[in-house]
Image: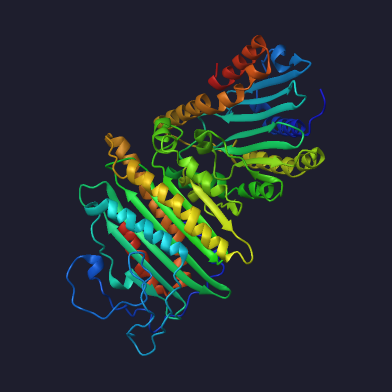
Length: 333
Length: 260
């Protein structure tokens, strides 16, 4: 949920409301929702991590609909898709089916140069999962494109275990920003046992090292001081830059080291956090709740309310932001 | 005692702090054998001035330790720590410089936070955002020889503010002169600038707090002092100095942190 400013500067100015802006893509939700829907023609280019890539042809909703070509299959989306599938498979019935409306599940801007997808699955009642959010954004810019992929799995107050976060921000074909963390939910200074349990015993730091050791990796400092403060001491926060001509190298790194480490971190999270429950008194629970609310709302505020309106038409971006706020349980302003 | 560039930086900051704090600091009560100790291959100094009644200062501690190893390499550790008390929640000032050879230096420089930051975004905005202190961190990290320093202790890593300078300046074996230039240049400038921010925005920041809140702030300070700040400062002493000397010095450091 942590966009680098330098990428945002490449974004086009907010497009004037387009005719096709609210054209809802036709949907074929059976595989996704598990519920019976009327048959409809196949979906527009599937960006969603859970969906299969499809052809670029889609039946347009309106005569002037700009058909955005399907964004190229990108290593970062493949890596994220694999992770999302692993999480969904493991969490099983603890996640409710997605309830995101079609025009938020996939959305585009009127100018046809940006597409996005959002999937939110709430935790089942009595599970410790609050929600799982997956999103992708693809936006053409003068010299190429920006691609942002996120997976965020939040736990609720049945446990104090860390949340899972992966964010991949690619502003060029030769560089990518990676944020991968188990977000702590307690004041680490006051809870050395928490630090021990979730960060030392799990050897999270070895995972961080594997990425930071890459010669192409440099530290990434989020422009948001809040975001810097919210991450753990073992967070992976790097920019991997392979230089001119380094497309192949970056692809290798994404499919290789990055895929392996993010899979390992998810595995650690699934094993040590997803299943954990914690006894807490009311004061502790209130504190946890408050902290979670702030982290969620600051991450929306910092991130999406800034970047979405710059990529998408106002009605599209407000619809998407509204859906995300719902998932996060943040009050509408 | 040969001049050492980074120690000069610390001393300049200490004198500036004293000048600006004036009567908010009581005179030192540290015995002479602690303000200056050791001989030959191991020398050191620790000086502590407590805050005057009514001031926001808890104490100011200046320390340096110098030891020449049997190999001939010199280890130099230099610290300036100014702790605030329960009349404010503003960050402490902390600087530590650790030189393990002529061409490499670890620089730790921070407005040390006293609250659980994600729970207090307004605290982040007030002391770190609005003050522009991150600019000074950026200035240092732009120096090509500077790279991040990753503490082996996860606890230590978790205590820093989002704008902390936590770096390792590596100039290569033969480049002591390059290091010295960086120290008297960018490091000195940024350190003085961060001290300036602290003097302007933190020392005078009186904050209304309910008793319970103040108590938990002070308790948090104590916890961090005990688990991290104090041990880091004292840990090397028994390795560098004779037992009776290091005991005496550690005792004085404990007095400062524990308010005895």
